[in-house]
Image 1: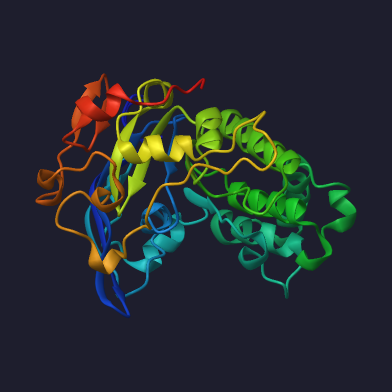
Image 2: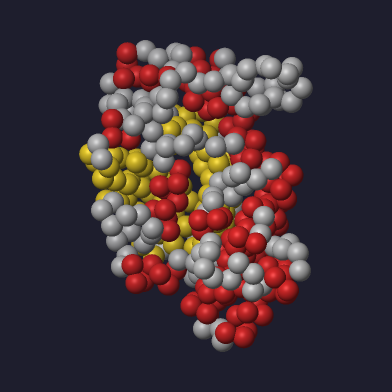
Length: 336
């Protein structure tokens, strides 16, 4: 390991991503900054289209060739923005790995699961085929795949959704990466399997001393699984801080809206969920001011003139809103 134990493992500064769309250029990510040391965990939360997955793909070097990336992404001090793809390939799946949200599209239906889990071992560690297969079986066993030794030559369609997700986790962890990105890793899984998968990821992160970025639209998942969190909307971070601090004092109207919209235990049958009025803005048509202005219940004209700066509302707790005094006065309580 290079550098001191306290130095950031991965450091992102003012990350911006511009994509070409059918409606013209779209600034999908704007001014995202964070850092993670070994063993630290960070959650990215927000609705679909807010920039979470694009941020993850930027870290992985998997954006379209036409994408324009600005800012800085450093892995133990080495700059990744602008890195040639041939060099990125040596990092991807080796030092930085990703669990994708849909295992059936992440797995190749034409190859056995054993071959797919063994591939990063052969590519990055130089393992012989026999040794890579042996390690693949051990990985599949570690992630809880039943009878891994017998099923290693089976194909993805022969497994359930939860089992396929375990296989993708084994692939992502094969080379013991420094940074693990989990992008909605429990999508389409039932609640019981969802809990098992999240517990498994947490155990492996702790066991191997990895840093983890967990992407989710579910505040409950974020609350239980990460130390720090960032709430994203319209391609930018609208609230960030230690997870407990954010849930104790939710400062941004969007964070509060997400919290109020969650399903509640004990609610009467037929009770309608609270919703956030309006829709997420198109990235190609983002307003000049606060991206949440058109859906916000406390908006004033000043909100629409310029993107608000982040305001400190506590130690390491920032909120991108000019009306935090009003929003925090009516914030919901996490226990409510």
